[in-house]
Image 1 (tube, helix red, strand yellow):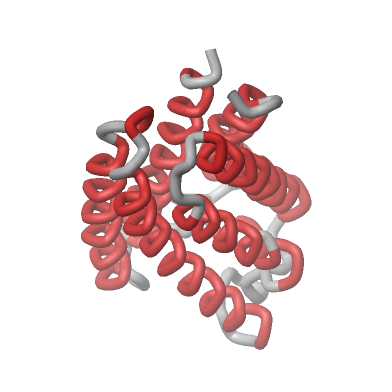
Image 2: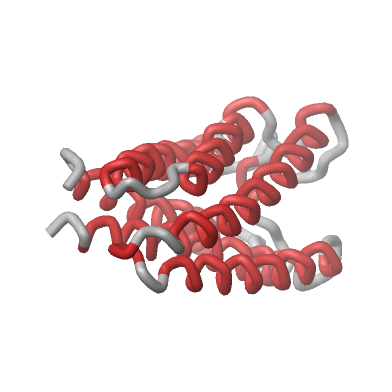
Length: 204
């Protein structure tokens, strides 16, 4: 067992919870915010009424996830497994954390300026990295007996994420964009949570 493995795992389980609380809380405290129509990024756009609160939660979620994937790399090394998968996923989180810090959407939640355009570009890149990380995890976990079954789980999650992401692309700008984005967020979040839960259980 890796030293502090439980702490790494708890960070991983907390990360998606913290992020999903952003849009859940917004539904209560931000007048006019619509979960079906509005995306999550608009909550942290320039001039958004609760930007500081939601930026802080977003950054905290990234930090928790980064800590977890560092821990998962250590766990895989301990098991003589491939560290490629968690390393790819970690790189996506390190890139992603710069979005709330440096590249929020522009006023009104639109990508009308440099920061807004960079926001979309980086989010798109991190999305591809997440998908790639799932594929690499699928391949790498085949050879880790302690994680038997999680290779197939990674592949299934990749397929479902890809389908829902394509659905999001086609619904961008429509009246259900917020809803489809939440499906993508929840599917990605449950993947991190399940990996973290497995990490926690294997530390016992």
